[in-house]
Length: 189
Image (cartoon, rainbow, N blue to C red; front, top):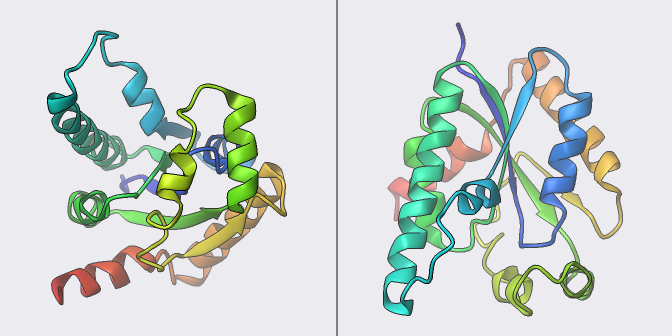
């Protein structure tokens, strides 16, 4: 049994990652893919007040657990679409380490800031300014297997672009390359 393939969507809050993931689940061929979202992991946490001094520690543990859940699902042979916000360097470093040996297609999900702010206001379920605070950080590493822009393309169009890229890379034997390039960069830091 081969380990599961991971399509890893990285973008700011409200960039359209979850919408793309839903579209991908409907069009990807082969065994069924699972959508494993960091928001889903956050939703499992008890709804009780966390002291501000403890919040960063709790969130870091949550993200680290999420990375390991992704690795575990893929190691068991499950194909995944994950969506995450790589807004802190340690998150990417941890993913590069924990997901080593797995095929991870890293997808940059972009969207213009003005559109992100509009979506955030319309959603009403995110703190105002969250996307703006992540905007300059999420794509700072600059290396992707494929990128899409939800400001100019629909979630379905982005999903079709991603599917086409993944199928082509797998068929050609090239596979995913971004995580390998980023790992090599990381060892030089």
